[in-house]
Figure 1 (tube, rainbow, N blue to C red):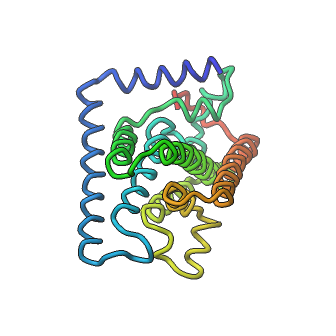
Figure 2: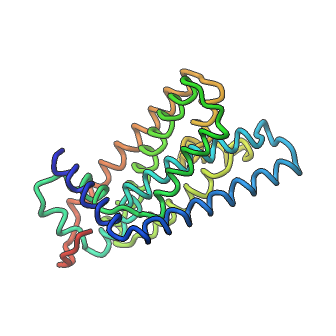
Length: 255
């Protein structure tokens, strides 16, 4: 644990070294997120509620998505890069260290731009999420579950590169997950909605946590935690199964 904490600290200090660049990147992402808020506000002003979703509920969804996504893509930036590192044979440095390799890889790099998502999501919830003690507690737990699920999913799909030798699956999974998670799953119907609740669990990244904040349901909460636990375990198992097939590229990098 001490080694992983040191890794995380080193990654943060590395990203903080250029303070002007740090704040520029964070601000850029915040501006991008504000554009999404304006889009949805204008959309619902013209169209009205869609299948029970209106501006306040979608802003809550965005608050959860940006916060959880910022944690995964910002603080655990290599979650998205597992496939590329495995396919290129660039895991040698991590495997040589006396720490758990997956934990080290996830904490080794911080993507400064996505830290803006975390700040934006928290502020958006504080401004538009009608925070109370209960709603804030559910929001925090929902964000943690969402971040865990997204991390496990990205690690699992990225780890397929150990077997296929290419990182196409990881990139495809990443883009599909974020694209569909940004929309309320209820706007989809039939088979698409089932798909987004099972194979591609985008519904559990933001829609379900947002629904729980608005109307808490113990059974739905238990389902969210179970799905998050499943994908964390799947990511862990797939990565370690893939390590048995890993072939070094003789590339000594910091990963």
